[in-house]
Image (cartoon, rainbow, N blue to C red; front, side, top):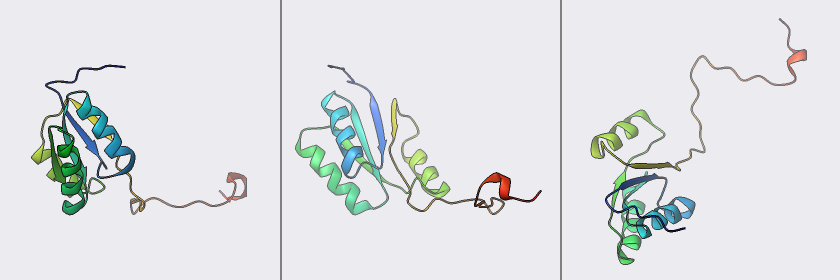
Length: 111
């Protein structure tokens, strides 16, 4: 499929490697200006260099989108996007202090 994304800005979170980086590469190949995102500046910079070497219009923003502060920093650095690919994942999900973990079948809990 050929898609012309010229003039569009695409943000791909979690795009320093793996599937996210492949998606960013594909968007760039379709003409989009791509923004690479990851938690660490060194990895973001390395991923940007890889795409730049392929002739892509790309820049990077290091921000941890699993935190409110990281999300705020990302939005401050890039307030407008045309395409969002939310690929970031967290291996340590945060829960609220009011959440509770339940174990066992519901019928075994007392009411």
